[in-house]
Structures are given as C-alpha cells and as structure tokens.
Length: 207
Ligand code: TZP
Image 1 (cartoon, rainbow, N blue to C red):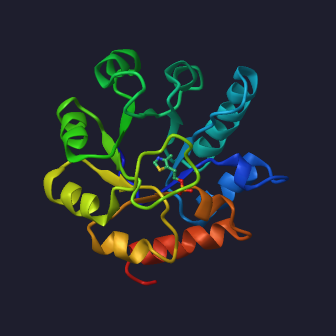
Image 2 (image 1 turned 180 degrees about the horizontal axis):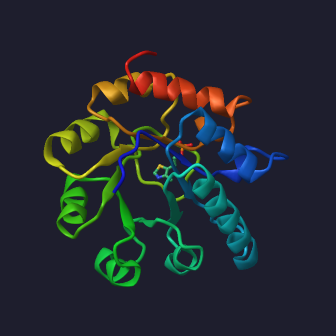
Image 3 (image 1 turned 45 degrees about the horizontal axis):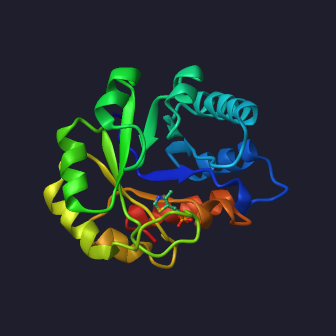
C-alpha cells in the first residue's frame, strides 16, 4: 500500500455544527495523508451518503480512503480499503471479499500483530497507547512498551493510535512510531489543519 504518516479518522461527535467533509478536508490540507470513515451511530442511508462524500473528497486529493468495519459499504463506495477490529470479520474472509484492497487490523498485543502480519494485513493499528474516551469498547491502554515491541518485531507498516495528542506524540515517535493516528485531537480542534500540520512537523522532527 501507499505509505502514510498522519492517519485521520472521522469523529463527528467532536465537531457539532461543523460539516464532516469540511472538517476532513481541513485535515487533508493540514497534511493528513489517509482518511478513515468510522461511524458507529448513523443509519445505513446516512453512512452511504457520508462515505460517498468522503470518497469524492479523498479522490480529489488523491489519498487513500478506508472504511471502518463495513465491507459492504467499502465495496459500494469503492473505498481503497477496510479497517477491522479483533472482533470484526476475520481477516481471511475479508481478503476473499475485498481482493487486493488495503486491509488494516487493530492490534493490542504482539500475538495479534504477528498473526495479522502473517495473514496478510497491509498495516496494523497499535494501541490504544493511552487511555481514550473516543472508543466505547476500547481495551486498557497498552502503553509505549507495545509501540517499542511492534517496531522491533513487525515488518508491515504500523500506526500508533489511542489518546495521542500533540502534547504526548513526541514520546510515541521516540518509542518507534513513524505513523500516528488521532481522532479527537484533530477533529475537535478549532484549527484542524493547524493541528495536522503540528503533527506532521513532529513526525518530521521539526516540531
Ligand atoms: N482504536 C483504538 S483507540 C481508538 C480507536 C478507534 C480511538 C482513538 O481516538 P482518540 O480520540 O485519538 O483517542
């Protein structure tokens, strides 16, 4: 898959009154280079409409578009890939359905990371690094040690996720992450593009 640095995921509850597509466009303008549509609350029609709009947006900027959890939706809008949690569709079944589209897998332990890699995941999410309120069923934070472990043992791309803020991302990078993902720190910002630029600066060692 095409490599990336800053992975922005949608989180509409963090920006009431602001349009989803506008917020995500600001994220892209600020340097987010992959976008995931994650939505645990909207109904089918809304989800289809939003996913189509984000597909259009990401085409305009030529960056990958990933859909969380919903293979049918990913196929319907011709997303570039799908992101699956440990409790979602098994990777091998997802691969049969999406062919050579990107498959990302959330992992919380090195055994899960190694298995995802062996089964042909294109990238893994590693986290939650810190406690986060964003994900309801999230497991306990895995901490920076997990990031160190993954960076030593995993050869496919991995992205650190969970509670990552501009104020703590330095230590995540120091632990070995070269790609980070954030929801609340990006989309709740008054200056979404500026928040992304600041993340990129940190990833480039300039922050
Ligand atoms: N998966 C692991 S933690 C998390 C997801 C989707 C939520 C990340 O959100 P935030 O606001 O960046 O902590």
